[in-house]
Image 1 (cartoon, protein in one colour):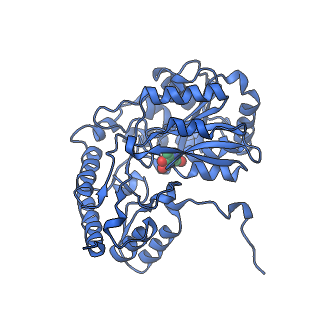
Image 2 (tube, protein in one colour):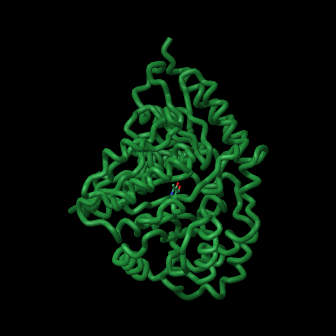
Image 3 (cartoon, rainbow, N blue to C red):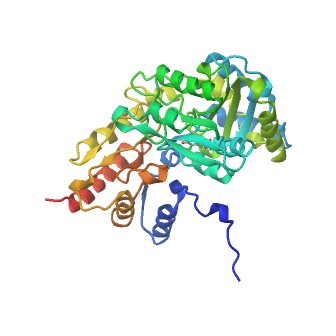
Length: 404
Ligand code: PLP
């Protein structure tokens, strides 16, 4: 007898915690120390949640014993509403905000509430793979549009246009981008908004890294460009506030909500069926958004994230055979290996060998639904010492495989 997993899971991928990650756990259980550069989890690298967030959650534990409103507690939603207003997103009311157990829950919920079998969603390639997975799991078809490395990983607008069909229901934008670190210009966002408005697509804008910006990069909320169709924006505590374990995120509805009454009903229906997001964390949201934004000190020149990002970029691009677009935001680099220079078949082999031989865990580019086989993602969170150690090992491995 065998109890089998559902067939609909058969072709789904989530490589950030996929088979190579499982292998790393096995190695750790055998006593090996692995440098984990696979996941954007700030706490694992000594970044603490701001004290005032932790304090407010603790102080409110007694008020957090019961279920809350399915959309989330009032003060949290009000704070997100004010945040939307200060970012220039118009006509966002208190019922347009849904708090979730991280953005992850809301991504899946927003797809499950929308898609019928065969409906298509345009998703960037490379992407944050939960988007692709959530569309497939919800019965939809993920259709990937290209982000062009030669154009600093900006979305290829012509490719988006070419991939719109009568079945397309929405388009996903991840800005600042995971895994490429791209931050989009006003013009790019305007162009995508126009396509969405013309073809009546819902815009899903994942902006979880909107405060992690380097060297003067500016973040423009997609929702400020979307007026004639629905825009669903996502944000949360995990990255800007280094609080991934608190599982706090939010979704903001804006734009032409009048055409989306049924879909919004669907979102509320699913949010109600899961009762509510975890309540203690919700008490930290107002404090996070309203208080001192300590993330700014980490991303400014001399700040820890700034220094680490630059160090990884400088060291990797100094290796003959590695190139990389410099990230302008978020917590990752997405470098390219020139496979003609090494005896390495593809990104999967590179990642597997780096784990087994060098005890460094990263994620292959194909794990981000990227069609090339020569990229990998590395996180910028480790300390300077860990980064230097990891890159020494990358260098040692590449030199052992270098074609003469
Ligand atoms: N969206 C993007 C682009 C991410 O990179 C991540 C996490 O890495 C998430 C969403 C999920 O975030 P959360 O911790 O809020 O579920």
